Amino acid sequence: MSDAIKSAQRRGPAPLAGLMPDAAKIHRLSALLTLLLLVTGFSLASQAFFSVNNGLTILLQTSVIGLLGIGMTMVIITGGIDLSVGSVLALSGVGTAMAVKAGLPVAPAMAIGVVIGGACGAINGLVVTRMKIPPFVATLGMMLMARGLALQLTGAAPISQLGEAFGRLGNGALFRMVEMQPNGFPKVIFPGIPYPAILLLIVAAGAAYMLRRRQIGRHIYATGSNEEAARLSGVRVDQTKLYAYVMSGALAGLAGNVLMSRLVTAQPSEGVMYELDAIAAAVIGGASLSGGVGTVSGTMIGAFIIGILRNGLNMAGVSAFIQQIVIGAVVIGAVWIDQMRNRR
Image (cartoon, rainbow, N blue to C red):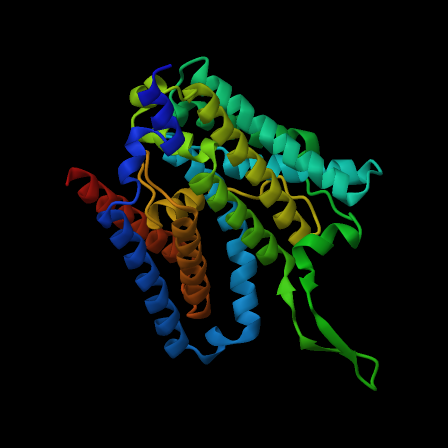
């Protein structure tokens, strides 16, 4: 290998020179401004919106979208897409619940759920890299198979009676303070920081560090920026794509654990259309569907935009059908802005 290529690998592949162009920074700043405007608008429309309880509700609702969005961002940066995350979420949650029902402790059972998600992601990655099937088709097939398997394993019925420990991850909180009143009823002094929010923060920080500071992160950006140039620079493109899909699947499995834990039941029909929320969070946050551009911080902003928009519309009494129209319009607008940016 020449000295030039070795030097390029130390710096990261050549396409990384413009990873954060001014247009991408402006896109992320505009998303942050949109988030602040939404918070301000909904706060003025309803005093209850800015309450502690509603803030915690938004954190809980956004945690699942955020976890899915982080994995989706990695895949989108490579130039791919993962339509299977909603179904993988359901299958992983069902797998975790079945392991708990079989007598396994909650923590190992949830680890199995994450492994199931990672295995589904690995299948996606192998189909894309080995069979050369477009990511849209490959993950669409996995979406159908994972959903069908979840429904078949449960007979389309929820798995309940999973115990108090199963619901701790989704419903517990750090630093929660409860005081018993003289009448025997508990009074919440401080609701605490929800465990799903803490988990999202840890995963987001780890993913951001990996993408910006580790070699695999530089390879993910290089693969999406210019796959052939990355290959010539010594990047193992297929392995990089496989890694991105495995991470997307594993995070879908983790999100499945969080969601099913919140419900304290495993619903095989959960996660429908969640893949669109994950894609929307990434795109609104500045990820380019053409590949090579995207950040975890931007995806977190996008996830909170979706979460706050849904929450605010719910409080305003807007029907779920109208909410779908609004979210769809927001996604179209974000993709249109991305296209305008790429044409420049």
